[in-house]
Amino acid sequence: MEYEIKLDVFEGPLDLLLHLIRKNEVDIFDIPIASITDQYLEYLEIMKAMNMDVAGDFLVMASTLVHIKSRMLLPDNSEGDDQEDPRMEITRPLLEYMAFKGVSEELNKRPLLEREIFARGFQAEAEDIALPAEAPLSVSIFQLMDAFKRLIERSLPSEALTFRSEDWSIAERMEYIMERLREKTALFFEDLFGENKTIAECIATFLALLELVNRGLLIVFQPGPENRIQLMAVPEGSRA
Image (cartoon, rainbow, N blue to C red; front, side, top):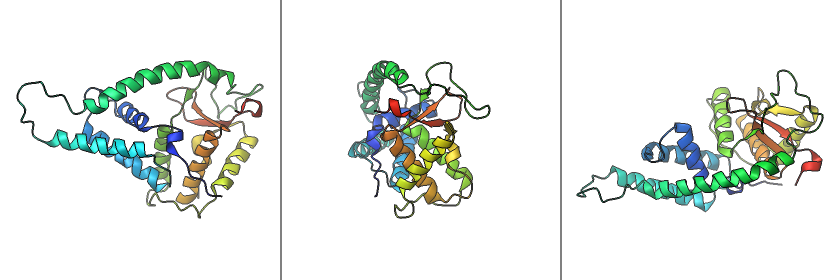
């Protein structure tokens, strides 16, 4: 069976923009539009290279960013200060979305804890898992993509990021991940991508990870902002 990972199930284009703004540590009222646009388009290319289904909203935002970038490059012939900064076309919806997302995340905190992210009787292995003092931080798909991209560039720098579904079975990689988690309570993200792995196998494993998260079988988290990304299976009694 061939799986198609739909990106909009996880996050939308505004999530990607917010991720880039935070990653680049820039002021939302003074977005370096040329740089952010180029990075946004790079993410879309990576998604397409991995056969991820990029929803139309992502492409609309790409067109909007390119349009704003072109407007910013044109000489300003207007007189006075009445003309609005073209970047407000994305700044306004970003601010509204941030306000909405802040409320939404607050409402979701209690259900997240009630799902018992850490199973009863869980014992952390000394070098593996650091139990968080508070609820663990959720990890976005774009943080996962950043981690995956760094891993690939470090391990397989000479290979192109391309993937054919016939190379590896995503269903088999899903079973591989779950089997690893039956052997060990939790894993570091990079533990799934050991040595002697081809680029196709790594991508299939990454897509399998996303599918397991989408199905509510897997949780990806960080104990704290400076900690490595970890994953663990959702206890059967807590699955949706």
